Amino acid sequence: MTAILPPEVLKKSASVLELLKAAGLMVVTAESCTGGLVAGSLTAHSGSSAAVTGGFVTYSNAMKQATLGVPAEMLERWGAVSEQVAQAMAEGALARAPGAGIAVSLTGVAGPDGGSETKPVGLVWFGLQQADRPPFTQKQIFDGNRTEVRAQAVLHALKLIQDSIRV
Image (cartoon, rainbow, N blue to C red; front, side, top):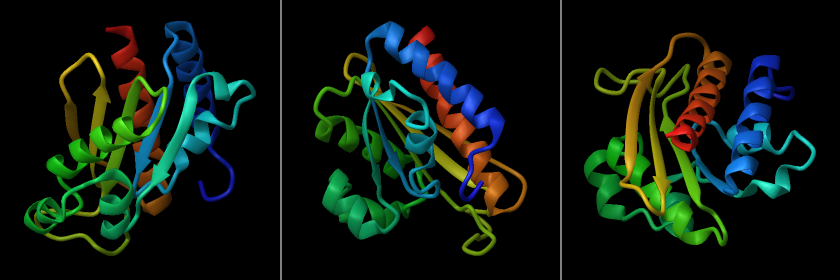
């Protein structure tokens, strides 16, 4: 999944894009371990500007702080791969994206390096924020190599957006 998105990701993103359009919602992404792949999957389709306002790729802690307003103290206490940071990323993205009605964030350990006993390779925290709803976070642990973990994370983020629209 480095240059070309797998068919299942493109199919899911097309479906989510149509749901966003039908709901009159604009989405913004805040991505770390996926490096912009969620936004890329949505914008792979013609007409995506009707439902995608943009995305933040905040791979480093410094970028999370500078562009999304994630507090340094939070990063120091909980680490970048945490529920708290995923929530702060989603909140920060929604606050900084004009016209966005929903934000999704992802922060995780895609591997093959960087894992630990408490934060293994494959761990991804997701955040979802909508203006009229309480914040939502979720943890998933995916199996596979770096490409597979990232693809699964993208699919899960798209599912979270889809589910939040259908509620």
